[in-house]
Image 1 (cartoon, rainbow, N blue to C red):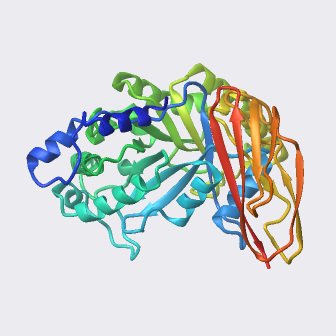
Image 2 (image 1 turned 60 degrees about the horizontal axis):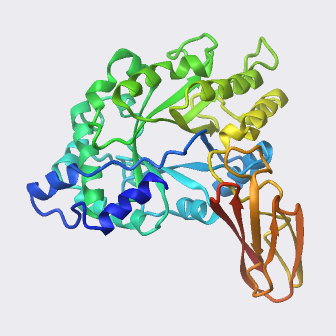
Amino acid sequence: MPSWLGCGLAFALGLTGCGPAESPEDFRLAEAEAAVTFEPASGVLFGAFAGKRGTEDHAAALDALEQVAERKMDVHRIYAVWDEAQPNKFLLADLERGRIPLLSITAKRQDGSGVSWASIASGAQDAQLKAHALALKGTGKPLFLIFNHEPDMAGTAHGSPAEFATAFRRLVTVFRQQCVTNVSYSMTLVPYSFQSGAADAFWPGSTYVDWVGADAYNWNGCNPTAGDTWRSLEEAVAPVLAWAHVKGKPVMLPEWGSVEDASTAGRKGQWFRDALDTFKRHPEIKVASYFHTTGTCPWWVDSSASSVDGFHALGASGYTHATAAAWLQPSTTTGTAPLTVTFDLSGSTGFQSTTGTGNDAWGLDFGDGSAQVTGRGRPTALQTHRYTAKGTYRASLTVTDWKGVKNTDTRVLTVK
């Protein structure tokens, strides 16, 4: 049973205190609540942030990356600002698709103004925290939450490390006061802070942090301030692994990536293959979300054919399938009636199984009241259905893997 369900059961039985926080005593009660982790039993929850290209939106960008990887992502990284209403459209889309959102909320408003960590710590931002807490609780689905990722790179814009730590504790406290049991909290810094000792000053405490996160990159000279040598993922994550081990916390990589080596063809592809070995050597790494975009440097997966091959091999491994994944791919999502749609179900995958294998049963609901199609074992590669009337339809594929874990992927179809 996922640990977040265990926490929810404790709340239901009245074993923990939750409700409106109206006094210091109420907050001290919330501070003592148990942690929620939502760790996979083994392997890595594999995901990404996908940057937009041209006129595509973020949903299309992620779909395009999944086509390159030939698998559905378990996790999707979402970046949000302080006063952005939650759940936002990206988070809702992830829940529809059966992905786990990895939500980052930074202390910056939509108008560009900053929110000081001191104001959060003092309780001045509690109304916003409560709104976020209730909204995310209302989804009823597990998600990861990062408060102000990479605070160690913010300078003094938002405050001191101690103020960050206190603000982090306040956020978790307010969420727990609202009986939020489906959110797991990560402190995410850059790897060097774990190596230099700077991370200690940002640490909110083990009671408040479920995950230690690090954004790990192979810069290879693309950022003059970050080193000019080729660096394996093993080297990049070494500081956070050592630090998190002392804290007794699992590790996530909310961002990670590599550039190409202009002097050695195929090196980035091998970097991805070596990353799989790193994951297997360090089972404390439980989440890895690739940064598929141009940030400081170009991290695109499809920067070369060899890079694509290496990423594909990494994503196809049973080790990077740490949960069941239904993957429903319609030939089109819009058209005029009558509309014939062919659904590809073959990429659906079970726990610790290579892509396209590991499922025990499946069911496809076309969403128009017609009979559901079901089967055993691997879902039939192609299912064709004809929508005769205008309307909006929600086609859903549910798979049950060999361990009995279910996952559902829902696609919205518009027939004009």
